[in-house]
Length: 276
Image 1 (cartoon, rainbow, N blue to C red):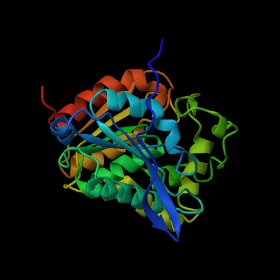
Image 2 (image 1 turned 90 degrees about the horizontal axis):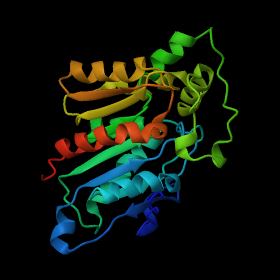
Image 3 (image 1 turned 135 degrees about the horizontal axis):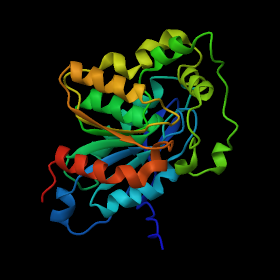
Image 4 (image 1 turned 60 degrees about the horizontal axis):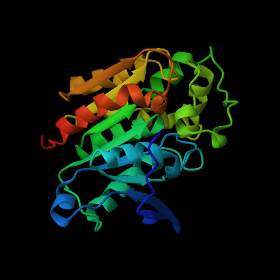
């Protein structure tokens, strides 16, 4: 029998507003006592959905697992493409982290990391670069410009036929490579404006001040393994440590939670210097 999911302790908390529209997040935590709570680490958990869809509510399962491991978990919604193309999603995740740092929620402000899958994995690494905090990316997409130029003239951009709104995050894109859909997803993220591709390509702005990163990717999934490998090379070139776990099969992001969670938790424990 699976463990029951934790409900957020704070739901639909306004962390910022854009054009009068609120941006909301949920907070998952189990309070123990003042000293214990103040010493625990925290995670900003970023939902996936190709930057064009998704919702914080679908992260309840992973948020529950992380709370069980002793974390406070902040799960934000963010603006979606193509209405709000890059860098809107990145800016919103960073705003959520600022809210978490200045909120009244008790945790150790020195021990904050970012975790996400698919588009959320991309945003987690973007946040690591911007803040110097550790990040975990499951099936993140990074080398956007290269993928588009590499497939120009050979692959049409096509949306998926999956009913994404009716599916759990762990069930989406679990059928292996789909370069036509990946191309469509990337072009949605830049609002169809190719001039944005370089800025949206995380591989092109790695810096030495980035936090360390744990990558996971399946060998035959929606995101080709060349992509996290390119991001890992970009980080290595500026002296930033990272780990890449390659998983057999074609599962995508939270579809391989059972295979990636142990390495993820071990990485977070080291990166955040959790007590033994």
